[in-house]
Length: 205
Image 1 (cartoon, rainbow, N blue to C red):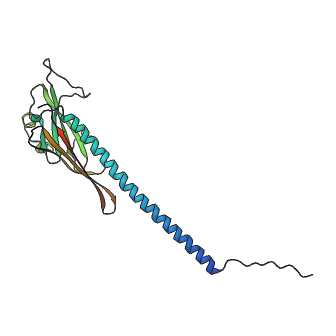
Image 2 (tube, rainbow, N blue to C red; image 1 turned 90 degrees about the vertical axis):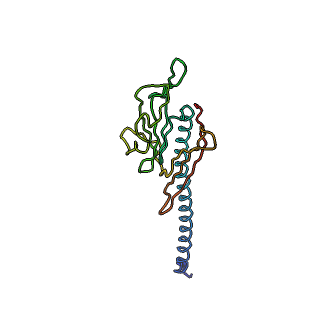
């Protein structure tokens, strides 16, 4: 009776090389897809975060300007100041005749790091007569902003605001256009840019 012989034939070197090559190609393709997807996600996420913050600033300013007075508006490079009749709890106060009592200037400006900050400047006392920024402070808004103060609060935290401007729009003295532009780095040497424009009406005119 002849003995049974078992074959011990395995994978050849060529077969192993082909298998490893195919696996490397698959791994490379998956890595490229992942990197591309991650890059797109970071770009969309950065733009969304920057846009969300600037929209919040724009909406807050839009609501505030609806109850301010044009006499109290002051503008400078990347800065806006307006009169407010609200106190620390954001409550409006009026006199016996129903006129708003102006209490403070609210200053929104872009700091050297490209973040929008807010500063409060109380008036000498509540008054129904709207003073101009020059009358109240004895200086222009540009001269007044010498740098950030510890009490200033941040309104934006994402990206860099490159333009923050409130300019006259049309022939009506109470209609303005708010322009906010910003950018967010999304990679080496690349930036995602954003532009927001909205019309703002000062109703207390």
